[in-house]
Image (cartoon, rainbow, N blue to C red; front, side):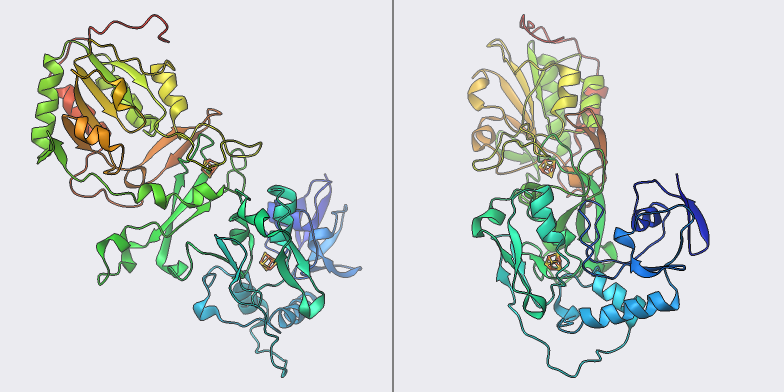
Amino acid sequence: MPEIMIDGQALNAEKTQTVMEAARAHGITIPGFCYHPALSVAGNCRLCLVEQEGRGIDIACKMPVQEGMRILTASPAVQDARQAMLQFFTLNHPVDCGICDKSGECLLQDYHYQYNGEPSLSHDPKLQRSKFFALSSRILLDNERCVLCSRCVRFTHEISKSRALGFVQRADHALLRPADPQALEQDAYADNIIDLCPVGALLSRRFFYRARVWYLQATPSICPGCARGCHIHIWHRKPQWQLKSLDAAHQRRIERITPRLNPEINGHFICNKGRDLADIFERPRLLSARLAGAPVSHEAALAQAYDWMIKAQHRVAVVSSWASNEELQTFQDTLGGVFHTFCKADQQPAPGEVIADDWLIVADKNPNLTQAQALFGSTPPQIDPATDLLLLWGEGLKVEDCPATARVIWLNAYEDSDSAWLSRADLVIPLSLQTERAGHYTNQQGQVGAFEPCFAKPDGVLDAVDVFQHLALRKALQPSSTPIPKNQTP
Ligand code: SF4
Ligand code: SF4
């Protein structure tokens, strides 16, 4: 394990590390556009220049560590070189930060203020290049802002393997372009290049001119799009920047989703479906309890549910694979003994969706089927014709699978779920969403991930744990007399 000195600090590096990697491992920042820990080393931006005492200046991203080497990351020679490089980077850059979606998290802004800060030395007009070039139905390209770092190109060659991007022309005329117009469209991980781009050259159409990032807060969460359970950030407006003049829905909307680093699960990346979670969480909501189709108070709904529970002889529950570990455990602790319980897959792959691949995407499109099955077994729901009360939690069960004579209590969050259940259910109890409560999911590999609330739950909805505790606390119930099918996993 070689010992090296960086800015007078002795540190132990791995033999295979570069100076850039050793510095980062010890919390020392060396700037760079083209370097990214998940990608191969390109060494083309020349911004990570450091000085090796006695050897001069070279790039840290390609400099192997050697025993006893002494590195300076901020010597006068290094600072001069970085300042000169930043003059080159801004030579033709439009510096349109005021209207750029990357503003506030752009490395060029940060490095310019940190290492240059001078106006451009050039008196020549800037070269004009294509603006808002349509790379795909999800991504726009602003060639004037591109610093030709090649992170996006390397991602499509090395990580997603679509080989969708490349450069044409040389020098001042070099342009990022699609190698094949359909390749990026079909790349299920394409949006990662938007995060990878160190400047505002790659723009998400979903996030285009939608919000300034400094008005937003990133709440740690877990993607429920499949059982991989990728770690994500959900971006939404900070409470202190609520816009009172806008529709109230704007205060509660998901502005964007980005990956949250987890080396064991998703690394730095997520799939495109994970970026589109607003399509799930912003569906029309159920906002009041309904008894025989008419709105009722929570108290009346819970009293009715309890009354049906104590009168029923054959009680069956089908629990949700979108429920958290805490909710599933509460159900088991409170009502598990009085219902004969199954779990189900709430969601199946949507038409055209990538079902599974050899990287992140898995075929189970539910975040917590693993934990639901660990608690309640993996036998698909078999609802005995003798069932006289069905407690259905979430989506995914066919209405034909429920005996016509059974009463149905439906716990659900969305108004636009299967409309057959809305008319079939005798009692509907509206529930909160993942974005309105904290909890954990257990992914297909058994790894547990935590999510936090982004928003307060709206008036009119309940947390599932409160429903179960409320029903269980009224009075001890006798176990359901529904016979257990022979192949039921205990
Ligand atoms: S578009 Fe962004 S990531 Fe791609 S080469 Fe240009 S600056 Fe780098
Ligand atoms: S791979 Fe699965 S969990 Fe990860 S972002 Fe995509 S849908 Fe979400």
